Image (cartoon, rainbow, N blue to C red; front, side, top):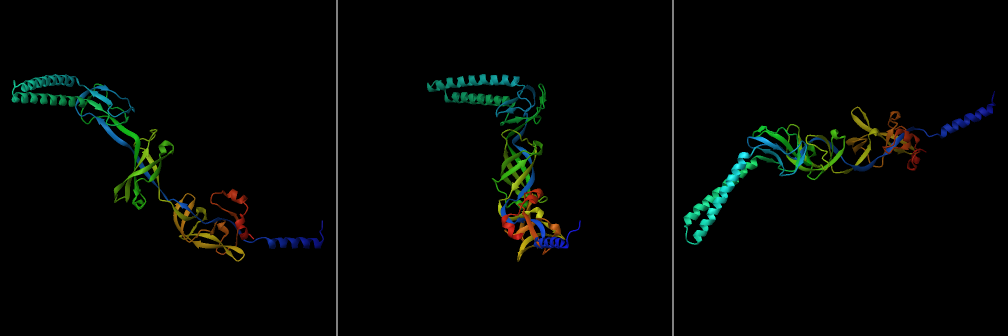
Length: 363
């Protein structure tokens, strides 16, 4: 079918007219630079220790006659853990008690005679010396008997026992371990550059890979007085509550320390371009009725997942390109197709209509 020439002319005229009215420029997504609360964090590795920990051992050489704990049992301070053979000491204790009772009776009898002027003061002094000697002997015997009872020095959980009934133990032999795990100490090396921010009472968060990444909170209780000359780090100790006894001594923990918060200019990490050792962004600025891309070198500060602190080259309120860099060069005309809040996916941005405050940049 052949169309009349005047119809073809009209179609071409309308087509060129529409093209002339279409906005020119590279379509980009842009982010409004803003100041926001920025907290720089440091990660460190720490090792857990029990609040109190000791190795339970004997102080004398003797045979084990009784074991009063099970592996992993919780005990209280003063609980008897192990009893050593004490038949001889018990006999000596009974003898010392009788000797003391006899010495006390003799002393009291002579004292009553002295009051009646029947006995002399010298006789009373002799009886008093015997009485004091018998009392000291009883105390010494009791002390020896106590050495044969191994008791818990504090509340905690015992480990596995390393002895059996009838075994001969010597001073220093390990019987078991005892840990007070009501709270846990977390020791960690921290770079000395963080010394200005470290302070007692500062909160920390810690995770243990062995516990499924569960987060635990604690506070710093002490900071080392020396900096390691090799690693340039300082030892820091924090305390973590352990009400459910999930934490155990020796666990490796990933610790997160936070500096005091500050206000900082930040942009999405995807807005940054690195080239020839420089870092720059494309800033959308007005040039008459047009919006153009301005290549601007910036100074980068600290980083956090997805965002970057800018310490120089950008001001709050400016717009930077986050998508569409590849077609841009300095001075290119641009059209902001959507406002990028730094969190939306590319699919969501493609469906987004320009925000009213950006409408003037698309005309």
